Amino acid sequence: MLSDKLILLFFLICLSIGVKGQIRFEKGYFVGNDKVKTVCNIRNVDWDNSPSSFRYQLPGSNEVLEATLQDVSAFGIDAGNTYVRAFVKVDQSSTDVSSLSNGRNPEWKEELVFLKVLVEGEATLLQYKRDEISQFYYQKGDSLFTPLIFKRYIDGNGQRAINFGFRQQLLNDLSCEGISRLEIERTNYREGDLVRFFERYNTCRNPAAKNVVKQAKRNVFNVKITAGADLTMLSTRNFTFTNKGKRNGSEVSPRVGLEGEYFAPFHKNKWSVVAEPSFQYYKFPLASPGYALDAEFWTIELPVGIRHHFYLTDQTKIFVNVLYAWTLKEQAMGKQDDNVNYGVIAGSNFAGGVGVASGRFSLEARYYFNRSLFLYRARVDADYSKASLILGYKLFSK
Image (cartoon, rainbow, N blue to C red; front, side, top):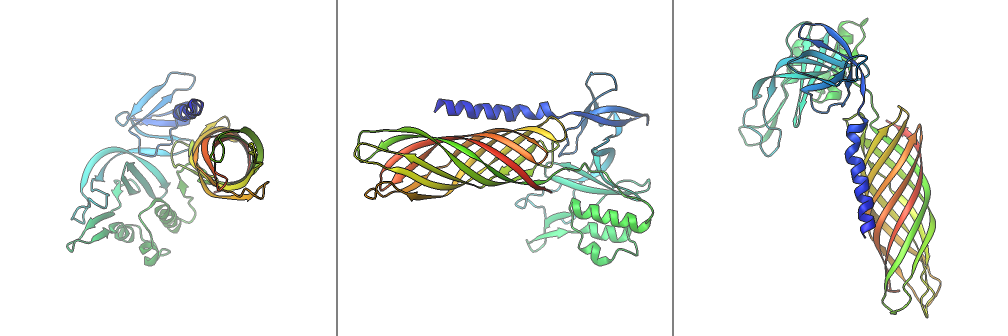
């Protein structure tokens, strides 16, 4: 239906414009080539890939300026991440398992990049990220930034192999009596493992010093319990046992569900993926000349989709989501006329929603576009759509 398409287009437009409008300028600083530190407000994009430039505003000015790799040696956001400029070796080896090279050694290329500081201390851990490249570096004191070696490759027997050279580097360069060889061998080439190792090393070398973990904290996963009501609108398309008596009707019915929400690791928790398995109950009178039939059934459906958040404050936000709702299970519950038996097959469809969340509570208005409904044995074809009002309570965040 045209109205359904227009509503879906509205939700898609809201999602597409959300990124630009909700990324704010936040208090930070940058250090120029002259080593002078400038306090400013930086547009915090919460970069997934390492940036090559950033936008900022000077205090008391609304003019938006841009700084690049060539302009600054470091920059940071007070409540976010810190980046330092460095001329480092970047491994160009393919990470695609179908295109791995035959050599075990990295294929180095020197590049000028911004490195994200993950841990600061006697030994500093940094990361460079670009598309499929994710590489870690370390620095002790004022030494050069050294890449931690890790590479997947094809060995001489044509088998996939991994060069775990970084473990030998940790053993040789970052050894401490409190860290065992087994701990190093169990350290994997990923952010969480390496952050923990560098925190352990810095504490081991200087127990009185505090590690500075330069990472913006964010929610990763939310779980909500949801409850509400559905206004379901049904229109019969075909009674195969009669040519008369097509019906239109609406019915309010209860719903309950459990929502899981995973936040993407970029753009400051603006984007998330949601899934909400839910239970709904329906009852429709489908009386037709010579027949008195109530379509009474329940469904379990799984809406899965993308959500974008518009933050008003740290605790309050408006959100828009687009979902696809799969019908996982449907079951007929009863009939008014013992002579007319039926089963039910419910289709799947798209949905869009707009809501507001504050603290643990959320309220969403959601519209499900037309889906098919088939009552077999009673031989009724129908379409139905629904509007839902959904109250959510956040059980926990992680």
